[in-house]
Image (cartoon, rainbow, N blue to C red; front, side):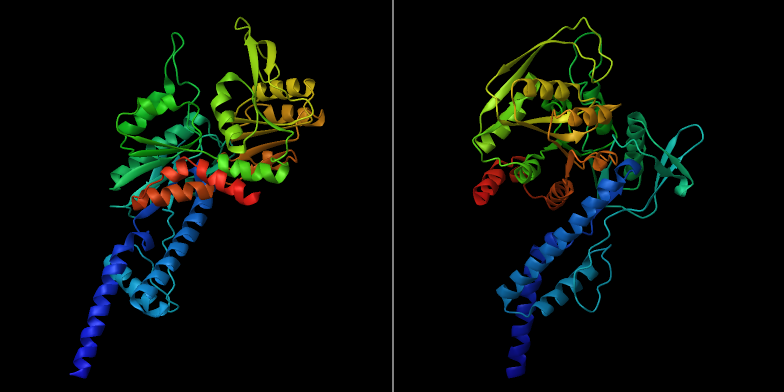
Length: 435
């Protein structure tokens, strides 16, 4: 009777533990999450995957600790039971080693990308993804040579080639039976063509409509140029991330942001809201640079502009000035703003851009500006692959791949992401702890 009672207690404990483990299964089993990296986005996808693996190992450890405490079991026993359930109920989990640690999937789907002699592109998945939640990663601003045809062909792609690469990859993923498709494009293509001023198209919204028609359920991007773009979608969700927390952390390492001589400035009227956010978060004054433009003049590059006159609202004399923008193309706006700020007596100028495109000869122009003392540092993110920028002593890169990994994991688990999208509380808490 005593042995029977013991068996009943063990059975009850097993059932209770099983129920608890199944309840938290979605946190410890990422087997249905998979990443497909387009050639342009492979570098960024690999960094995201590193953080995903670390994230799920952390969640697994927390789950083991919680189950061990709740059911008075040894951690090794909880690990054994979780691994047992994973192996018999979830396809795609790697076999567990004797040490009973979580061996999460590799996440990355092996894919072959082919470029034909006439320029056509093809994506071929080399592993089954049926029923999985697929996240396609692409960097449309990666203009470095990429490998195709099993490495036998190396060629750089234009933004239009990258777009076509996205289209054929989405189609391949849908044809392979993916449960859902999320597109991860840190730099949204054609974002600056978001409103019609005359006889021109609204290409930003048209690109999104094409994604929708191909079956994309959600799109994740970084600091989209205009929130109006998302309003053009019918079914596809737009998750617009912000790098402000990462930028402020790096900024605090470069200059004393708590100083009374620190000022935030908007380089133009279009960036007022963004810089107001930073000024509010840092509790600093906000200055505005207002430009009068002569639109009869046609500009060619960053050093040739149609600015007729510039005025400053605010005081920057003997101040450390910080400016933020969503993207830096040719850099004409920031170069002109930095020159003007120095003329107004600014002591030190720093800028931050979420998407450091540095198109054309922008790097050369900023090299010259830095030598002339127009600015101290430019803070950018790794959302755009740019080898040349990392060689500059005036450029500082912040890593946003962990931010994307957190969003991907939460979307896969069906959890709220509002606290990450609106990161003001995180920034305030971080600054409070720092002080």
